[in-house]
Figure 1 (tube, rainbow, N blue to C red):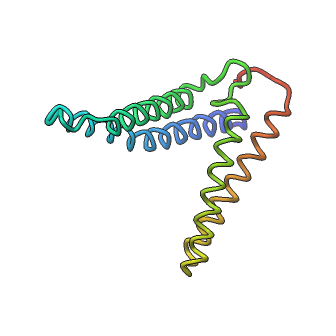
Figure 2 (spheres, rainbow, N blue to C red):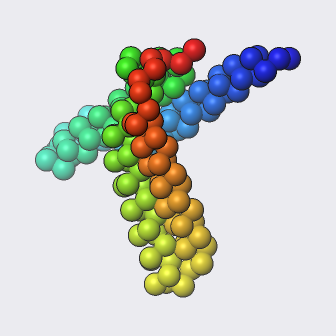
Length: 147
């Protein structure tokens, strides 16, 4: 098995792993939409502003995550650079992810839970790493889709 074959197998495995992870994350909002609609069918009096906001937001989140999963599975990302999302959007998500990690660490310090402190620190550092990778991709000239 040559290096080209190994690189292609690794690329395909990572694409399927990423798509699978996105499908797992899409399951939660899809579950909420399903049960919200099922409850509304069983008892239409449950439909109010909160229900509408929850169904619309969860539907949009499910669509977004499934679109990213499709892009990951198929390998057809953005036409400009082949990525799943623009670098600026990825950086925004990385900042939010890092902020949540910092909050978890702060709460862990406050409560004296060292597992939460370590987990939040790991989450924060992962977000910083993703931010740096997206920043490097943003500075790189457009090369078109890989492959």
